[in-house]
Image (cartoon, rainbow, N blue to C red; front, top):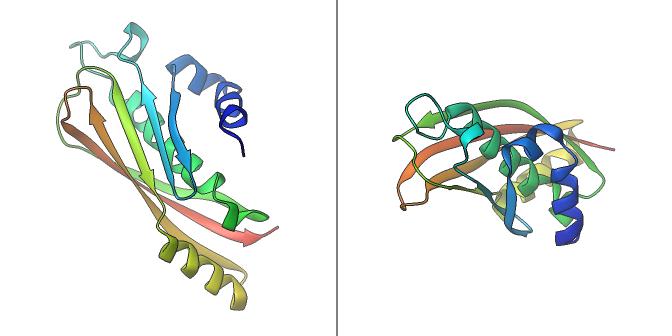
Amino acid sequence: MSFQVLVEALQSVPFLATLGITVEEARPGTATLRLPAKDGNLDHAGNVHTGALFGLGEAAAGVAVGTNPRLAGIVHLQKACGIKYLARCRGNVTARATLPSEVIDGVLATLESKDRAQAEVTVQLMDGYGTDVGELVAIFTFRRG
């Protein structure tokens, strides 16, 4: 998937477009997205809203999985997602999702003998001041298409 196609795909999701999420980087196994600290994304105390942080992290996890060419033709669905908020968040936020090759190896190996596989994608959230503000873990299920 080209970078421009990815940008257009994210913008086609109304919720993500409303948040103003942009793509910083996308390559196999890694996605970095950015969320602006704009009025609609802030809570009553002026911090980036935890709901916006969750949306950003969930989107980054989906991009890391969906853009990996080794998983082409394999259906993936998010089964569960959890987040830990580590610090209050000020300024723009960056979410970096990683899906290591050994995790993909495990998914593909499992699908050789079973109908479904499962994997976790970890997303680190960092604010504009370099502070780790959260960690999201998304659990995906996979099946052959």
